[in-house]
Length: 136
Image (cartoon, rainbow, N blue to C red; front, side, top):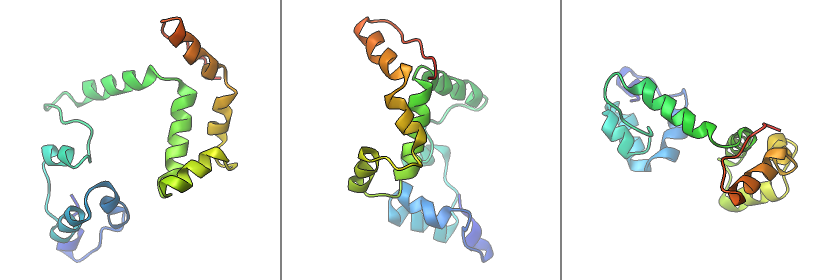
């Protein structure tokens, strides 16, 4: 996973800064200090990958995930990604404050509230039909 310490280096491409935020601190430290490779199933157990699929089925699995994402409103997906990036380092309290009073950096988040798609989604739900997203 992160073999740098085995050759006298540090995992400076984000490993030190990010791994302990994704998995328990002691596991992250163990992996970085030992440079121990982990299996796909172990990566899944720690939440580092979403799914483990048989050899040769990765593209089909990725397409299934992409198709599922494409069922959601494009603006909502863009806004979600924007807010997640902006708030990922904040406490829950500060994250809520950021979306209650969105700063100028959250342009897509602000645009969603006044979008056609924000009206279409609830309308389609009430009418028990698939929404027709317009991306605006």
